[in-house]
Amino acid sequence: MGWIEDYLHRGQKQDANTTVPTAFAGQARQRWQKLAEELRADVAEFNSQQPGADFAQPSENQFVVSNSISGLQLTLTADFAAQTISYNYSSINDRSAGVPEGGILSIRQSRRRGVEFYSADERLTSEETREVLLKPVLFPPQLVEIFYRKGTPRARR
Image (cartoon, rainbow, N blue to C red):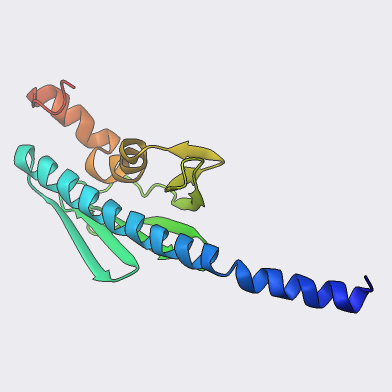
């Protein structure tokens, strides 16, 4: 087989495999929406103990979690073409003692054919993903100290 025939044959194989990226994109969007539900539930649980947190979805590919008590905001932005989620923290008032660095999670196919989030080549469970993202906003060091002094149920965990 010559290079031209080989090249044309390869193009036909790629056409047959176009359903794989499409299926992955659909699964990635489903996992993104599941993350939204999980974050919303975590914010509600937090607010049941200590009010001040808020979840918003300003666009299909963006979530924002803020905490007026800590003075921090988390912005998550999904880039499905790049298979990444970037997360950034910012100050929303003068209560924050500093703004943590953000980062990037990759969206990958897991061995079980599902879609999972990864940080530095380490697969994160749903719980780990949310803890990595929310802990700086909901439990920054200056607030954790206050929680322990007050003896709130959340602090004893």
